[in-house]
Structure formats: structure tokens, C-alpha cells
Amino acid sequence: MSDRFRVGIVGAGGVSQLFHIPLLKKSAYADVVAIADNDYAKAATLAERSKIPKYYRDAEKMFADPEIDAVHINTPTNSHMALTLAALEAGKHVLVEKPMARKSTEAQRMVQAAKKAGCYLMVGMNLRFRPDVMILHEFVHGGELGTVRVVRASWLKRKETWSRSPWLHESRISGGGVLMDLGLQLLDVCWWTLGKPKIKRVSAGISKDRLNLRVEDTFTAYFTLHGGATLQLNATWAYMSDESTAMTVFSGNKGIAELNPLKITKEIHGNLVNVTPAGPQLKSQTLYNKSFEYELEHFYNVIGGKAKPMSVPEDSAYILEAIEAAYKSASENREVVIGAEE
Image (cartoon, rainbow, N blue to C red; front, side):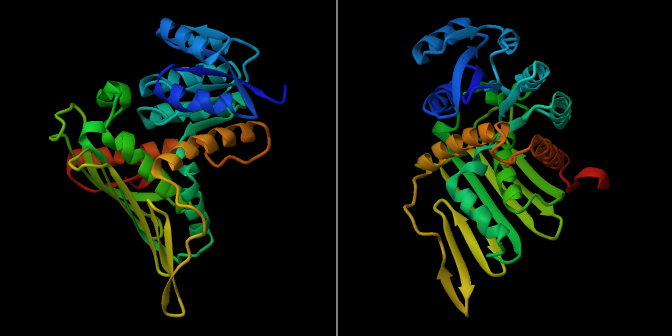
């Protein structure tokens, strides 16, 4: 294997065009050598524009190329499992965009296939790789906030800009609405930052009366974790304001940490002290862009033997179980116990 990995990308849509291809093009570790898309003309156009030597309509033909080391799957969620299984069977390492799958049962099949193939499967939970989130993760794991008992997180997208992808509001394709889209990401990053404790129970509510879609546009959920901490999450695609907003607060018995912007406050000798690391406060869009850059770099460091996985597929399968429990809670209007206790 050369010093640079050879990459095939499935999906010629926005996430490939805006993030994956440009970041790989300027990277020191990988070259994009092929792209596949059901829309052959779209694949050809993007290949020509981005100077990608090979393009395909059939992704499995691309997977058969022995020169390709790794595959990025940037397609609608309903295709993730089949494409991932085929790529793994062909011996390729796989980075699949979030959500991992529509259902936890699909996700478990992907986990088992990766184990059988002996290849690295990573789900693109890019929020874990935001610079401010990684700093927060270090503070929480270092015990700087003491025992964290409550996490509150919200992600409110302005109604006019919630999505340019119509398949997101087709549950047979996406697996759900805003709970699967934004809620899954919020749950993952908060749970991971806390050290991935067992999720015990959830009580959730959803509504779909703002955008008149077939899937929910708004949700609120309360997750109880092993050890007594609670996660209070809410998100919407229909925020009636001039600007979208996101907020996260980790409350511990020795301090609190906030995101957007990052601020960490501790009680020291009876005084509240701002202990946020020095440095420029990056804008939200910059943090978002950096999260993709660091995510891709980490993926290739792992398959190159330079890093241990910060993201494993079992995590995403577990988060999908919790999301399914939240949907059940909302549907049945009751608290749902997660896992074997149910």
C-alpha cells in the first residue's frame, strides 16, 4: 500500500461536493480515484470537475476495483446498509454518513459484517470532531466539572432553511424526521462526551404540525442514564426566528460547560472562574467545517494504524436503539425502558 490511500466515493450530492472531495483533495493522506452515483451524468460531471479519474453508475463495480482501499458512502439512509455490506465484502474500509441506517437491526448487520471482513467501519458522527466539543470532552473526562448530572441541548433550525434534501421527510428513505436527523446527532455527542454510559429510559414527544410533513418536525426527549444523569434534548426544523440557534450545557457539581460559544466555568475557592482555554472563538460554520476535516483525518489515521478509533460502529447502533425507544415513547405516550429491562 502506498503512503496515500485510494478512495472511492458513493454519492455525488452536497456532502461529497462540499466536504469529502475538497478535504480529501487537499489532504496529505488520500486521493479520490473514483466516484459512483445512480445518476451517471451527475457522477461524470463531478468527476470531470474534480479531476477524479473513474466514475460509475454501479457502486459495486467500483467496489470491485482492487486499487481502492476505502469507500465513503454519502447517499440517502435507506441505501446505507446494502452499500456498506457490499463494500465490506469487497474488503474495503468504509466511512458511512450519518445516520448509520434506518433501524438498529440494519446497523447491527453492518457491525457484524465489519467484524467478519476485518475492515474498519466508521459512521460520520462529525460533531464529535468539532474542536470545541473535543475540548469539552477532555474537561468532562478529566473531572473538571465534577459529577455531571444534567445535560441540556437544543438545535433549532430556522423554518426557511431546514433542509434542501426532500428525501429527509420520507421516512421509508430517512428512517424518520428531525429526531433521526438532528436528535440522533445531539444524543450521540452528549452521550459520547459523558463517557458512553448506559441509557436506561426515555420519555419523548414529537409533533408534525409546523411544516405539514409526513414526519415529525419537532421533538423533545428526556433520557435517563446509568448513574442518575439526565439528557434533556429538543430540536426542530421549524424555528420561527430570524436565525437558527444551537445550545448545549453540561452541569456538574464543580462547574458548567456551554457550547456555541464554548465557555467553561468552575467554582474555585468559593468564586466562579472562567477557565475556558485561551484562543480565538471560532464561528459555528468554521467549527462545522473543521469537524469534517478532523473526522476524515481520524478515519485514515485509524486504518493507517496511527490512531485508535474515536468512533466505533457499535456506538451508532446503540444510539439508534435509543432513538427507536424515543419514537416508541412518543407514539405510546409513556416512558420506555431501553434494552433488556424493557
